[in-house]
Image 1 (cartoon, one colour):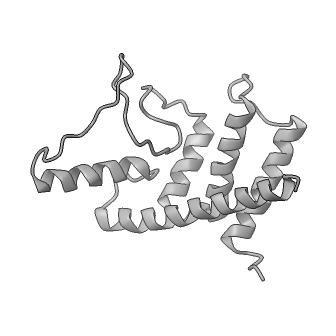
Image 2: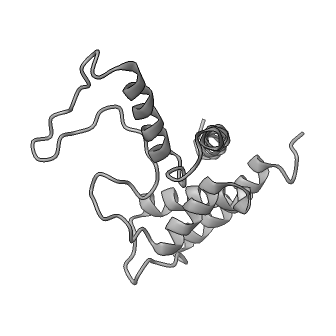
Amino acid sequence: MTNPGGLRSSFARIFLRSLSRINSGRVSSSRGRTLPKHRSISIAAYASMASAVGTRRAWSREVLRRIRRGGARRASRRTSEFPVGRKGRKEPGNGKKLKKEAGDGNEGSSIQGMRKKLRRLVPGGEGMEFHRLLAETAHYIKCLKTQVGVMRSIADYYTPV
């Protein structure tokens, strides 16, 4: 039995309502232009998760703020409106992947580099103290797992056997 007020139920309810609006064509476009359907679904998934969590968490406040602004801050092509992990970065211009050399720098700079990467991955993590960033990261990962589980359940329900 699921908790009717739980994160999974709240996310599913809000996300299904958003999908219904997208499917019926009642999606409000950002700045007068229509978004591709896959982009609308992606934004709906993030907005639904952030809405289900509410403003208790810094990452959810940041996601909702980015959605309200319409992604206007996408100044550089390397930054994404919503956090998406990538296995390899491509070097601008020639499309070749950059590889980190083993033994680059010392161990201290490696840890600092990992902290910096974590701050970029978690929405709103840029100005946080590290111990709070770790707590936000744990909650964000939990929410992403919930998001994937709900979306997988929806796909399974609508996939013919």
